[in-house]
Image (cartoon, rainbow over all chains, first blue to last red; front, top):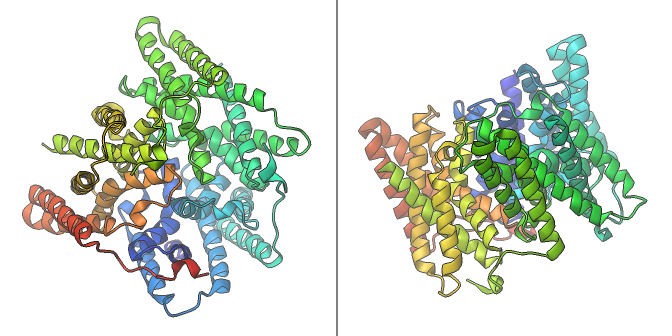
Length: 203
Length: 203
Length: 203
């Protein structure tokens, strides 16, 4: 079940990454690479920081295959179809929620400090998109987007609180649900965190 | 004592990172993330390369807490105050010197080759700022700035030379002092390394 | 022999990285850093992902020395000479082919899944250049260049197929040769993978 949810998240993020790469005019190989990086970058970074070696997909490359396939299908699909922006936002929120929950579970299992568990959940959910944007030489969307990583941090805190009270399964469920609800609410009502309006003029 | 110096360096770098993020108009969450990345990015990269697993802050997240707090305080502080540029340059130089010395000590203790010890010191001191600039999609300041990483390399060489002669404590002290003096001198007299003036027109 | 081929690849990539850095007007230190990152970045990333700790050059820094030396010689050389563009393209293709073969061999030896071996070969050959471009805040050349990483993937597939049939040496030879031939053919006839011509106007 967890393996299935993970591959679902991989596929969703690969599609989102591929669409971003197509928009930037990359060739079919570039689109595939960006799809893979978006889909497995967060989990890879988490594994490196936790000291899980080798990282997950070196021995069991299912995620690599699913991400490549999803990226290529997307590349050829959008040749003839308009981009389903709305569906994509929903799917990306679902991927963020799934990866956040699964990342928290992996961090908890590896003995990370309770304060670090939500950080690892957030990295798992959000770092793939950051890597994608860095490779495209853009300021990561996450820094400009409605409550995104914040939703993951909130979900991760729910994980830590519930893990002690109600066990691992309830904690995972709560983390996924809370991240999803907060992110969808942020999309629906365009919630943003405060920024200095005159940022660009400082210094 | 070493733990205290380390947290001091973390706080200083977090403030410098937060100011850079505010200048670019990021929201409060983005400012916090950039502050953390600037403050612990260098040590994290060093730990990964040395094979220290999991990286330091996964089990003992003091640095994470100090960096977040320093980043948030900075965010709200600069709303009402001008930026203390001059103090900041001094503090950043102090952070560079501290992290260079501590990075050399950690590399030495983990059995790195003597030629690699100064490289690890320099990475510990300078890589956090490089990561910050990469996340902001800018050419890292370090590549355009008065003698910065070079100061760290010189400090690191002092560490290696003195470690064999005078022991670990004297080596640490010398590395911190030399890095600081070289960096402050570079700021004071605007020292720069040679570059090809016609760089942009080549090729 | 393998160690010699590896250092040859390091030198070639360091020269290519240094030339790219000179073009961007970096100072002598920046040029040295970019040369090193280009030359050893791919192998470092591969070692991190495979869980080889510490990464190769921490204990035996030959590659670090060769890359620094090649970068500095290049910096001073181009002051007085035109850039040998054509030779450089050949040399870069040779570096890509060597690193791809050696990366496949290392991944195979560390127990990576057969599908992952070509990916590690490609990362070893191409990730250094990607890191260089990211540090220079540019969209990686690899995403815009004639069949580059694709040549490495093809070479890596040849490695996996031949490893079972003809042994490690023949597999290494075939991977290097196929990568080199495909890449040189792509340069010669300007082969490109398909992209969406209207990429920039999507979304």
